[in-house]
Length: 310
Image 1: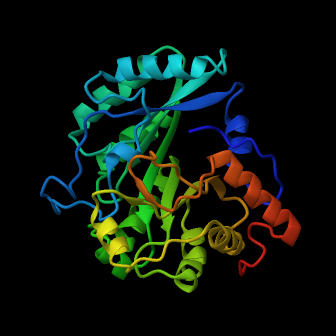
Image 2: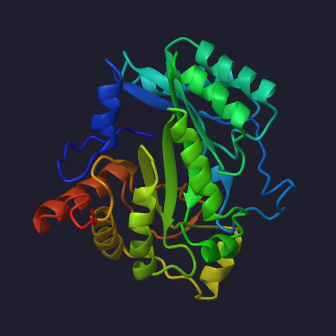
């Protein structure tokens, strides 16, 4: 993930925030640590979320057959060409990165942190896969290094969560966020715009609900239709609306007005590999989208939090 280069007062952007956390530039290095997911291995389901294909997550340098150390060294080489003095955050990204016994998780996280120039870890997981013992360990670890736990919330609508075969409720997501925040651990959330059955009205309804959670960081992505997924079948049957770039920018601008002003907004779009992506075909890089979005906010005098009821 490339840091947001846009310096804007219209929303609290991640690029500015992360530079305040470190005296040097940092970059996430994605890691595939070989985890599975309870929504795939049969504990909850075997089908997984209807939109999911983990091949869309892993960059070229991230290879599951390599050790964590090897993946991070490859990632460092990849990014060193741009920023020779960079330091890094080990990003446990693929599948559910807390889905293992505590002693195994500790070994994996400690291996990541032992690599030279690694300044902290970011752990992507599900709300139903974090124990109190794990959170206690991460709270202790956060006193020594940068620790961020990022939850896939996806929606605040339980009907939607069932529809996409997510396998957890919004109440579970809320509880996980609260338990993490209470321990002083930086807490992130991820949501998707354009899930089946959710129109603009429903998405905007959820904004103040998400804003009320004690999240430090929020990532927002557009719904992407990936080849070979059940979602692709819905799209082929014309049972899924995919936002155009103009629709999405307008919706996003409306949405952030209902988010509290101290909530850091990390990303607004995701880019899946072209050979896997069916729709939307926007043809924009992340920074190009961000520039379009910021220009829209400026033109329309829109700010994060300006419509949130206090």
